[in-house]
Image (cartoon, rainbow, N blue to C red):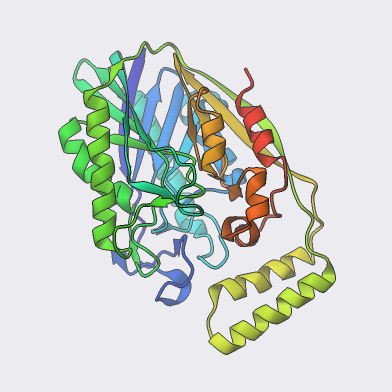
Length: 402
C-alpha cells in the first residue's frame, strides 16, 4: 500500500464572512483579521482520499460536487472520497446558515480549487506505507451542553500512519464543537483545533488530520468565559491526550481500503400551520423593532417567507458512507450528530460528523421530547424542516449496512 499527504493553506481574505455564531459585534459577520492559519489536510491511501479541513461545513449538493471533482483529480470513485469538516465557528461561510452569515460563493469556489490541488499532490507524493498505529485515550475537555451529566464520548482516538521516512500523519478523532473563541471573536480561526495542532504536531513529528466526531450536543468544558485563553487551554488538553494515545498505541494491520455509500431516509415533521406561522412572524417583528438588531428574529422572518413558498417534504435523503481501512471503519455522517447516535455506532468504527454535507442537527427521539435550541430553532437557520422521530434509527440502519 502507498500513502501520500498534502497540506494547503485555506485561510480566506480578511473581510470574508464568518459562519457559526449569531450576534457578532460587526455588521455582516465579516472577519476583521486572522488569528491562525486555516488548513486542509489531504491523505491519499491506496485508492481512497480523506480530506480534513477547517470550515463550518458544506451543503450536501456542494459536498457531492466536491467529491466528484476530487475523485476525478486522483482517479478514484466519488464514494472513495471522505470530506471531513471541523465545523469551526470562526471559519468562512462555506454554506448559508441563517443568522450567522450568507455563503461566500466566490471563496467556496476558490477553496474547491485549492482542495483539488492538494488531492493531486497527496497522490503524486505517495510512497510505500510501512505501518500504522491505533490509539485511544480518555479526555475531559468536553461536556454535554444540553445535560451536564448527559452522554459524551470522552475518547481521543488516533491513527498514525508511517512510511519509511517515519510518521506521515496522525488522524485525530474527537467529538467537541470548536466554539471556544465565542461569538465576540471576529478573527478567522480553526478555534481550539489550531491549538491542538500547535501543541501536538511538534511532538508527533508529523501533521494531524482532524476528524470531528458526533458533537451535536457536545461543547468544550469551559473553565472561564469563552475567548483566546479557552481556545488555547482546550486545544492543549486534547493535544496532551493525543500524545498519550499515540504513545500507548498498538500496531494496526491496514488492508486495501474499501468505500461504500448508503442512503438514509430521514423523517421530517411538517411545517407549522398558517396561524402558528403568523404568530411567530408577529412576535419576531416585534422583537426586531424593539431591539434594532436581532439576528435570530431576522432569520425567523426569512424562514417563514421561505416556508410559504415551498412545499413540505415527508423525508430528507441523507448520504452515509463507510470507508474501511482493515479493522478500522470511518463512518461519514451528514451533520451535527448527537452523541447518542455515535455511541450506538461504537462497535462499527469512528463516526465522523460534517461529512457528506451538513443537514444540521440530527438527534434521537428523546431530544424531541426535551426540546432546546438544537431541536426547536436550529433547523430554521439551516433552512430545513424539523427532523422527526426515527431520524436516529434511519442513520444507524444505514451506517450498519454491509
